[in-house]
Amino acid sequence: MKLKPIRNDRELNRALKRIEELWGAKSGTPKGDELEVLMLLVEKYEEEHFAIPASDPVEAITFLMQQNDLTRKDLERYIGPSGRVSEVLTKKRNLTLPMIKRLHKGLRIPYERLIH
Image (cartoon, rainbow, N blue to C red):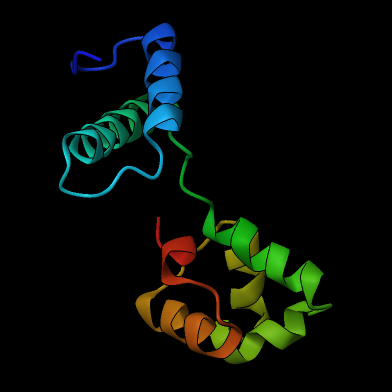
C-alpha cells in the first residue's frame, strides 16, 4: 500500500483493512514499519475527525456521587462548606486547584476529569 495522509473515511477503511493484514508483523521489518506508520496515520485521522470532547468536571463529580451513593454533605471535606458545594455543582463556581487536589486524592477522580 502506498503510504499517504488519510483524508476521508474510505481511505481510513482501506488503511484499517491493511493494518489487519499486517497485524503481527515483526518490528523493524518492511511490513512492521508499514504497520507502524499506518497506525500513526489512522490515529491522527481519528483524533481530528472523531475526537472525544473533554468531560465536564461537574459531570465527573456527579457521576462519582451516583456510583458511590455520596451526598453533597460527603463532598464538603473536598470542596468546602455546603454553600460552596452547591455553587460548584450548579456551575456557579469553578473548582479551585486545592479542591481539585483534594477530590483527586480523596475520591480518586483523575485530574484530567477535573480540569477543563
